[in-house]
Length: 252
Image (cartoon, rainbow, N blue to C red; front, side):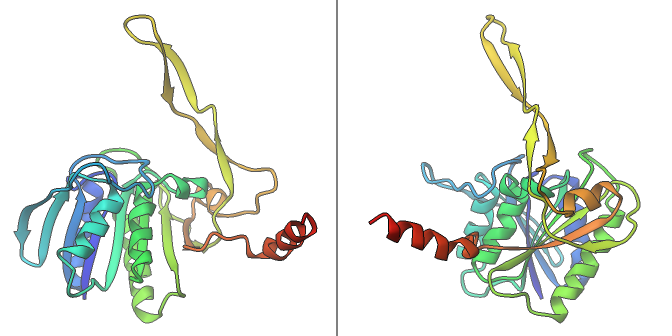
């Protein structure tokens, strides 16, 4: 098995290094990750300048490359250069330094990289730890990632489906298979001034579920559970298509 790993924290981040080391018993591992932090880049791609892919080192069955672009650029470029002839068997993204539950799936570069693998039809998994320290304890994250990877080896994911694993900072109570929580961020900016007295805005904030949100990954993660959520590429609200067609037809 050949595994492609990317992230949004950069190829030097502890999370991706420990993940790569843990995956070596499963086969060959290739890291293609940004040359620096790219958190919050979601599905962004680089179209205004060329990209450079730099080989950093090869150690046994591990190859490491960095890319100047976004997390999605890294996966896209890897699949069109290194893996142009033979696709990897699995795409992993992470381990992210920080959780990516709830509405974070819309912003996360970690999810963006895994989603790109899914777009190419490759089984893909995003892994995030609810700890933003530079060198957190990844033991539980590695253990649960191995369990999910082995599950993915045993069964084929549905078409256009990827997985997102979130692991709490403390010892997990277990694993919850659950939907993502629909939420939003609040208190998103701290207002300040620059050295010349001009107004500036620092992005911050925290996530809360919407009032109508069912229990999902946001809730279970805060209760101490690791969460595994299947996500799909098709974001169409299929249940509303017929009604929308009727409304559009009635207006003619």
